[in-house]
Structures are given as C-alpha cells and as structure tokens.
Image 1 (cartoon, rainbow, N blue to C red):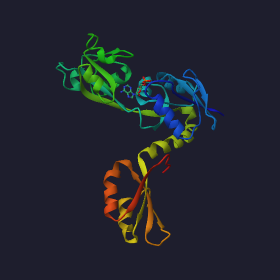
Image 2: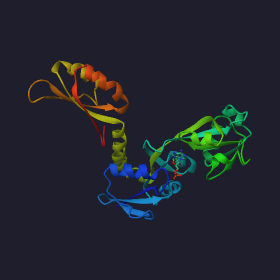
Image 3: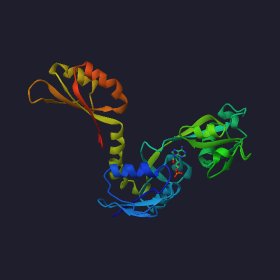
Image 4: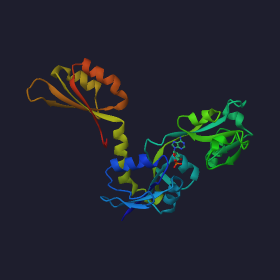
Length: 282
Ligand code: AMP
C-alpha cells in the first residue's frame, strides 16, 4: 500500500523538509511548484504538497497517513493526531508581547487585556493554565505584530525565532508560552505505518548533532582517548599496518568538538579527521 505523506508546499518549513526527506534516502523531484502529489521513486510513498496550515487536517482526516507540520499548528488545531518525532528545525517560540510603553511587565498583568494572535486556542489554554482567565483573544491570520499599533489589541501572542520582528514593531516580549519545532505526525490509525519513516528521518536528525572522528595514536594513549571519546559505547581501536600505534574511530557530539579536539591532541592523537554523519541509528 502506498503511504501518503503530507508536507508543506511553501513557507518556512518547505526547504528544510525537502532537505530532510532527500537526506533520508527518498528520491523524488517536484516538477513544478504546483504539483500536489509527487511519487517517491524508490519507495512506496507519495508526497502530498499542501499548505502548512492544512497538513494536520489532512492527516487527521486520513487523506494522508503521516505528515510534517509545526508543533504549534498541531496544538492549535486540537485535532486527534499523534506527534511521532521532533525534527529539530522550524524552531520558534510562542511569545506574549506588549508595546514598549505598556505598563505590563508580567504575564499575570495581561488579565483583562485584548490579545491579538493567530493561535487563539493555544493562547487561551496556556494563559488559563497560568490562572489568567479573562483575556479576550482577537484572532488574526497574519500581521499580528501590528495589531497594537492599529488599536485592535493591547498585547499579542505570536511566533518568533530571533525576536527582531517584535523589536522592529516596537514590542517588548513579556513571556514565552510555548516552544515549537517541526514534527512528524501520524493519524492514530496509521501509527504503525509511521514507524519506518520515523526511524529513517530520526536517523538524519540524530546524525546532524554528531561527527565521526578518526585519528592515529600511540598505544599508550588508548586508555585516555577511550575516556575522552567513548562514542556510542566504546571507540573502535584498529592496529596500524606498520605496528607503530593504532587508529581510533569514534562519534562525538558537535557541541563537544571544540573542547575535545585540543584534548585529543594533548593526549597524543594525530591526523585527526572530522567527518559528517549522514544518518545514525543508535
Ligand atoms: P509558513 O507560514 O508556511 O511559513 O509556516 C509557519 C510555520 O513555520 C509555523 O507554524 C511554525 O511552526 C514555523 N516557524 C518557524 N519559525 C517561525 C517564525 N519565526 N515565525 C512564524 N513561524 C515560524
């Protein structure tokens, strides 16, 4: 049976999503921007390019078995889909903000305010969870950040990544309500169909945070290097052909590279190579 996979057809999530699928080993070409369905040539998968906002609906309705959408959209839709995996891109925050001159300093002080947002359900729920109940949400689909200037609202709750759009529009962040990123979703009925895709996409996501390290070292350095770069369980240690030491292979976190490499050198390692990992299934 062909698996239908709904993904964004434009916007911020399109390019990183296509990149993720291609890196996972799916071979496909989207002939034109208008193509709605695109077959994956080497797998029984059909990609359904739809508006980011519609991905969750299509998966919930069973039009597609799986999909990729922002977690914020999944939560806002309140539809019955399973979040199968976090994909690590499309990261943003749902932030409450007020005009720079506003007396509001804390979230609790937003009680009684009119709040413009494109995420009214999530906003009302997250504020209610914090005991802020009497907020009037003004539902907008775009340009939320200009609502206070237009006199439509006293505050906003909007998605931001760097926060520069808030500053440009004379707004001051008050609190972060929610962290979002792109996620793989499946309808409850298709949960098992998603497992294979989850493994393959998850392998790309996991590989992005790691590097493969290769180096030569004298035999007496092996114990110290083993402690420095234990890898997934232990590093591979291979004898060199000339018998004058060993080659050591291991996996490290990208975030650790900058402090690990000088430590490896100090421990006697040489010829250190750092390679990307395309996919990793731990
Ligand atoms: P689109 O409107 O198609 O560009 O996609 C919007 C989705 O991209 C949102 O629902 C978020 O999941 C995600 N996203 C990531 N960063 C941001 C941002 N700074 N502002 C808005 N949406 C973002």
